[in-house]
Length: 435
Image (cartoon, rainbow, N blue to C red; front, side, top):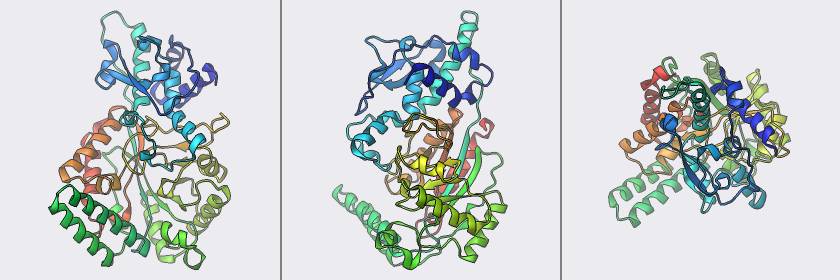
């Protein structure tokens, strides 16, 4: 792809950072050398920023793919437009997918990759750096410069995977607890082994209602929360479901009058209703469209936002199928097994299709999920609070746009994750002046 096309795309994607200085940004003397190929596994290098921009880096540096770094390169010799494009559209992952098929949002499958690429919102930091560079060119020598403030925008999203405990949920979560209990046993932690084993038994045999809609009602004023979404299932139910669907898909019927009444109540309180596609709908336009129509007909109003169930996702198929089904926004892009910035960005952006054209759908990356804090990591309360603070702080510091998942079924006694949800919402009030 030509440099001017890449540059034009990046100028548009990051326009919120350059509303008053796009012309100055566009004329920066950015190195135009394009790498010959995308390397996988990824190799990354830190580039030292100049003194006037060190505060926007991580320890004064920005992480870039090695293929853009010439021998002894300084920040002035980096093709920053390409770096933005490389991160934002996950060029390395796309190449992996072409060679191996989609990894469906599990980072552990990327063996030997440099995970530092997911630790920070590098794209946002580069955007701020470029705005500082443009201002530095026009400032008298030695005068301090600052970037214009961009307000963070965070979506709190809820995937309605269940309204009651099904056999599939019993098996899945009990298996998680048993796995963690065995892991604790092998590490010699008999206290957590006993705790997790007992929790597995309680979970498997207990009964609980999973709607918990009353616990989702938020006062968003004084927070960085710009939108709250409940994503609901519109796929097969009951006898229509195959054995695979019974194991992996929700089992409730969106046409249930009581459920519709509850969702309408949430909608009237400002909560958006989205689609949570079925396990196999990540690549099929017809399946996405039929599930969307089912939810739209049940609710009686347009449904334009969505997230794939289990974050099942392909760069070549998913966004295309969604956009062809009338969706304007997707919040799937993230990892199941770790928090972080999958495309090095906290930014609502329009992704590139496999043919190189810009797709008519906005992707809002998913940075943090409740299970990251409870299932994939064995955090105590303090460690969990620190993790929440770490990821929210990164979004805030760069004025980022991102989504966070908290499942309604985890807010009851069965899971006991309600305190973490309260911590998250309270944390989003701490630096409300940034919002």
